[in-house]
Length: 297
Ligand code: NAD
Image (tube, rainbow, N blue to C red; front, top):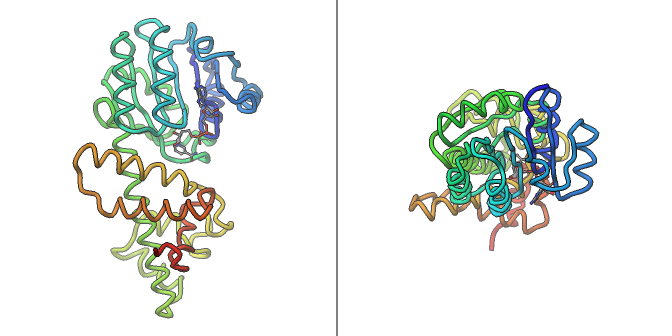
């Protein structure tokens, strides 16, 4: 049996990530506030604990996968007050850079090793163990965490000091939100001009308009058979989660004094889409709002 790992937050992402650690031979003790998540984790071989601290007792490493920064700071406050110095803490949630740095500071004060290691790849990547991790923290913490991350993801990047993983995540997702809107606008314009979707795809996918939102995640059905547009825009990556990440990017931009006018507009458009009750649809479904012009004031 390998190391003992505590896993806090066994939801849509954390559940399958913990299951992959079990499959890799780690002894995993998990905790979640939701009884349903605990049941699923138990069926996957996770030993269910009654609290954060019960899960963490005797564990060499703790992974957290929680909704937002306040949850991470709250759970890490409990953890750092209780676990021995030298324990490795990994947060894979997507949170604001300030909370990530606060969590690192808590860990450092108690002599724990810590990394922020948010992911991309969604629930499909979590199940398949093919997530991409982008990490911030010391070299020593990253080196210690890497063999654990390797069992949950295929690519791991050490992006820099505390908070650098979250910075990489929100910058990447800001590009994604903006590029998806750009691709959707191009299809909406092409349609009005009488251009077929396939013709636009054929040209742009091998020309300078090429990007992931077009060639991997095409927002119209047909050209890329695996994209959510072909299955009624079932997520995939939900528009509500894109909005969360765009908000984090805007918060960070305001704090850092960076100009991100297109990021701000992308946030406004996704907020409008979410306000129409469509936050549960895939984020590429925003093409409907652009076609219908229902975003205009
Ligand atoms: P989720 O809501 O399915 O899971 C979060 C879990 O945390 C829930 O089960 C909740 O009960 C639990 N939780 C909350 N507070 C807790 C506490 N104090 N102690 C123990 N458990 C607690 O969310 P998710 O989709 O798994 O996402 C988790 C994180 O990963 C988020 O930060 C999200 O932005 C990020 N993320 C999600 C995706 C995705 O496609 N779902 C992709 C990349 C990143």
